Amino acid sequence: MIICRLIIFVSVLLFSWQPAFAQSSETGIVGQVLPHLPKIYQDNFVDLRSDIAIPSPSLITTKIKDAYRFDQSMQNLNSKSLDEPIIVGLYSKNILNKGGGNTSGKNIYVANIQPFLNYVNGIEDRGFGWFVTAHELEHLIMNRMNAPVAKVPVYLFEGIACSLGYRFAINMPEGYYCIHSIAVRLGDYSYKDAQSSLNNLRHVEDYAPAKQAGLMWQHEHIGGLFFEFLIARIYRSPDAMFHAWGKVIEDLGNNVNFEVSFKNRFGMTLEQTEIAFLDYIRVTENNPNARFQGTVFQGHK
Image (cartoon, rainbow, N blue to C red; front, side):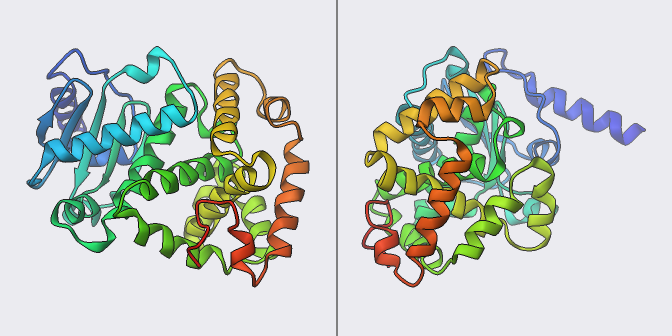
């Protein structure tokens, strides 16, 4: 009981330092990680915290803001809720080994610091850090828009975050390696793999079994490929597709049923779209060049 009170007291101290930053009610992994992270940098939008020194915290902060505004702009989203400051916690392997993981809520984004250090130090895989950042900040944006994962099929909640992550990472020179490595794996998935992902990462309660089975990467990125399919084969325009999804997010925030909104905004039911997507996967088996035509992965296999 004394320990619980101490944890609560420390959490209150961490969140009470400046009223301008929204108070957070996130629990779980955020509650485990954030109290360990001292504040190392702050501007008017990002409160950056880490348990180890970062060589260029202003550079990291700028890139985080770039990723956030990229996601927001791509979906043409405008809401006062999106202008609230965010707390970013970057943790070392010491905390990772205690159970940390990349995650986000309404006001907080917490991630492993290593890819960010790689970016500063110029290591090849640094692009992965920017993919993860844009991915997690899309979750934060949807939560702020009252469009949480409970309202959306999970493979789509993760998939839109993947698709935006791909496109943010590839906009920078360091993103090539990240996108290429993802394409190599996505090119090998079969119709059965895609069918499994759509069926087995659908509800919030599917997260735990997918993680236990080691299938989260497959399920999330097949969700990302679903959105790339919409871009390449249905809309033939990234802007049009992302804007349509932005309207779905707005609808969810206004308590419109997801499948009703999806049909209104995309012109097909979700079931019809899934059938078309699975057929696309089937006819492009063993032909990644055809699969990736018109997607962010074109030329990467």
